[in-house]
Length: 73
Image 1: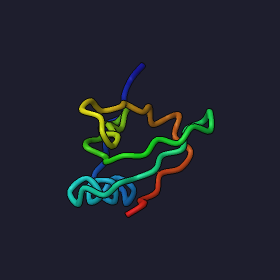
Image 2: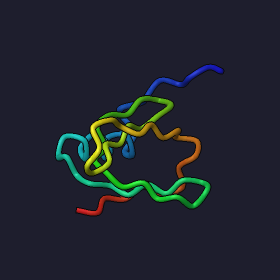
Image 3: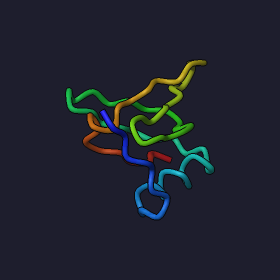
Image 4: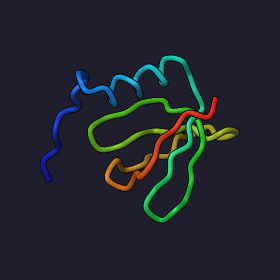
């Protein structure tokens, strides 16, 4: 599978980068209706890494399974 490079000119990519810099807590809904909440720590073309509250290891979420991302701060 070929990965498309992350395009920093896209508004969604820029918004997520600003949320990373600000350390905002976000909520991500995925296809199976699960909601994952935590602080977004990095993104790449395939995954978002979210550090859940009280956890020391991030959860990786495949972009293709995400249905909604919103800040909750």
